[in-house]
Image 1 (cartoon, helix red, strand yellow):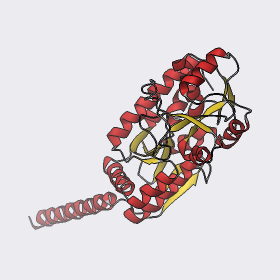
Image 2: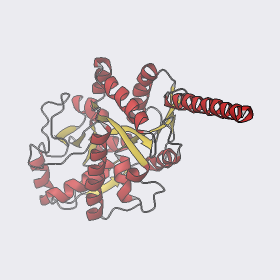
Image 3: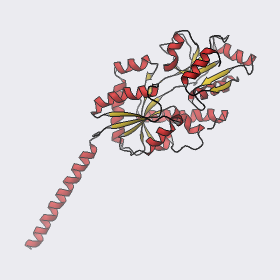
Image 4: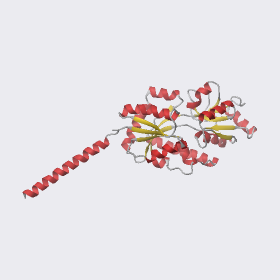
Length: 327
């Protein structure tokens, strides 16, 4: 009887220790973050995407109390970094700064080793930077109507530059051709800078350029802005109409970026990062820094960002299919 009682006491004590240990483990797991966080970026250091990643990362460090390391993995139109991020452990310690490329690439690349919708959880859209349709100063047009009329009167004479085949400037040019019923030769470059230089020099007639990279050039009079590919005008270019104002509704081209996490990342971790990022984007100092480079702070919820990404994939998929773009 005494032996049985001792065994029962030992069993109860063991169960108590085990349950306490499990409770402590659960408590430890619930504490996020407790080590450095990495943000993978699919483009080179010093570019607009990298600048946004480092600005937000430095603020996340202060809010979350852990180092936030930005790691650049350029190449393949951000596909290298995207694939690595998709395979990362879904624990909240590897994040990914996705961009419009993660929407356009879904349609133009035949064999991707990741899927933006299947392999990632959208956390929050950080910024949006609308594109601006610009032309060489010597082109005899000052409005969109004049540009379209010129294109129709001079078939085969217009050309447009892009930062590379399959990127948003390329797809934006194709969408303009489809919507306006005009023709123009696509001239791809290895980057936005050489593309813009050749539009300024007159080698190429026109192109869609991200506001963050072309505003100062327009203000200096080195390029002529025709229209903003957005539903609202840019404060930096108040006299330039939007394509929506000119009759092209839903003609939005934005070089957006936002935070993603690998599929399977715990919901509470997603909410922690989203809440911190949204608060950071409300900071007047952060907003001023972003707006000075032509980027509009967004700060959407995970649900809102998910809907936006899906809409972008569908929109650019339709354009790519009509233009028969495949890489």
